[in-house]
Length: 581
Image 1 (cartoon, one colour):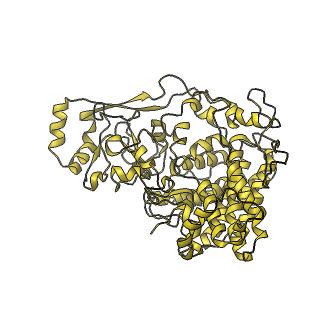
Image 2: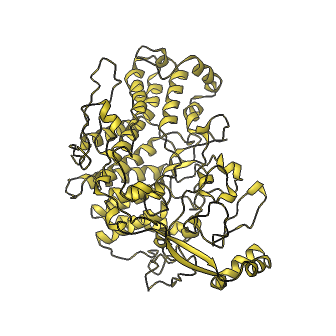
Image 3: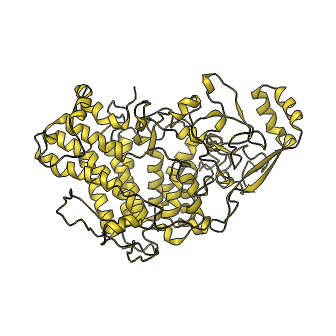
């Protein structure tokens, strides 16, 4: 049985809570506690309170960020330089207040010390996580670390970005010291936070702080070393406790809580609680095999081109053992290509009404009557093909916010930046080996031997782009490395315009003369007999025009109006706050 993030702590603290939690919540408004409240004397009440923190703070599935980079079509104002001061509003001080109330008061209660410590761990973690998410967007924000009262001075100034990072790390260290040690294969590894998740998050945070977004001149001493130390500590801890790369790249999302899952939001369909399920899969699938949602995660040609050939070499590399064919572009690619992208003529078997098998996806002009993909492609990764249309809309597939592969990539990046490329190679090799790329004569899986720091940096960012595609990571990588202008500006993302070369009747006759398996096999050598596959612009009106001020977004006007001591960010109208301090 699977439990959602909301019930994680309830599961751990014992079955007695299951019978009392609903009654507890009926009796007590957990948003109105105070320092003398009996909640801090009750394990049931305190547990329910922490459960609410989990529910409010856990990240989950999102289709938002794929369109904000070259992964997918869309992105609008982000991509075309049309953001305003009010476009990005992430201001979770209500969640932070709930956390501060617990941290300020739980030690005043009568719970045993071990229970109090155990409940404080998630609070420290999520306060760090909420502040980090704000700092990623705005730079420094007001650090509010105690519950504010109406009589307090509420016009709090923005702390420096450096001060905010310091507090995030302090809270993560507190979480590391209080969260439990959990082995991957133990019954306690059911989605709740553990020491390994906090260690891995600390590594991610310090990687961001060391990156050019926060240090454009790369002159801040010690930041990359701190990132290296933290990520190495995370990897070493996870290794000892049984975490690692899962054997199947495609299966990461379907065999839930496998050894790769480090920080997870769990879901379980519950018709009365929409927080327990999501419609991400429905939004990603073609409309004819979906319902209630569509149009998300449509891959671009740029994303397709990022995947190497099966020997790990780029599609432009003439030395590859697998020459790239632009018309048969899916052949002999990194296996992650076909596990991530669905193209015209590819199998995309799904459980329509639980009975369909051998389904082929057609994206040529006229094949899709409703909401055709603008790029000629669909995204397969993490789309559970056993789900019916209804199940896809009410999906309970877990969201893995941070997995072991990212820890390896974070460590590889930091190792390279501190002059230890020999430690970066094993991480990339392990990920490529798991993907199924050919090892090659030198067992480097297509990686160039003896890469310079710049070459290795590019190789790591490319591996992140491929391995973590559509996991809401690429947008942030481009942003933290300040690569939007050099990578995308002045360009237009492309898709595929696919048309029939033969009449529709002729095509239908061919299609109906074969089984699905025979037809797919036939197209491996005869695709161009029936289809003309050309490129077209997906950005039809404007070139991509990312602006440098987007590396730190504006504080929305409504927050400035409520707090006269808040300064606007440099680069925006009236801005005087330096986010690099």
